[in-house]
Length: 282
Ligand code: ATR
Image (cartoon, rainbow, N blue to C red):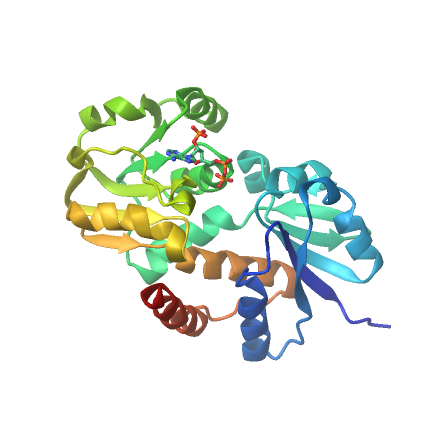
């Protein structure tokens, strides 16, 4: 007998998450009844939350800040890409246990290639940041064929640790943030720091930007404004926020749970129009 499966996103704070809206839109589009809620779990309360959720019919969940590492720890099994990221953003109920996956990196690469037409193969890429967000996308950028991945971070030891964990010393180059200007121009600059949430931008030199540089912020909305303003002021060819990645990672999660990949463009277009109105209203 089938029961009504439940889905959710766990985060803290999570009230403003767009994920319930995105999954509802995917459900409407595919004709799949989607029961997807946002559940706030304070850091101390997250450990039991997925088990409680499973007990009340939970079949899958997204996990966002600050719980991605904790979700990795509690998953019973993990995909290779979750293993590589050391973080889980998608939980799938399998045979009474939680399987952990990470769709963030695949979501970023799909947004860059399909939506923005940026072929990552053979491109010099700079990753700014070495926290959870950076770890979530670094492996997928390498798999997409970037020529070299230079990693800088305010705390250099974390850039070194991320580079070591990626295990590709020929292609991955940790550098000091203060000296990254010596590395020349990059084709793609990815801001994976949380600096923008406090209105700040990592201190970056103009020398990073060339004629064909694209800049991406993994944040969207207000938090992406400082870095993308820096990028535009320095003449990047394209400045991209994290909204497309958010929609694409959601589509990957939806496909894992429901076995159907939704069309992302209509959902992205609607959210982008809404987002632009919100940012310009501030
Ligand atoms: P997330 O999961 O969002 O990546 P995190 O793991 O706390 O969160 O990592 C935050 C990242 O943003 C780190 O790379 C952090 O640099 P440090 O490792 O030096 O802390 C970076 N970051 C945050 N605020 C920053 C700022 N004002 N300038 C530069 N980098 C900043």
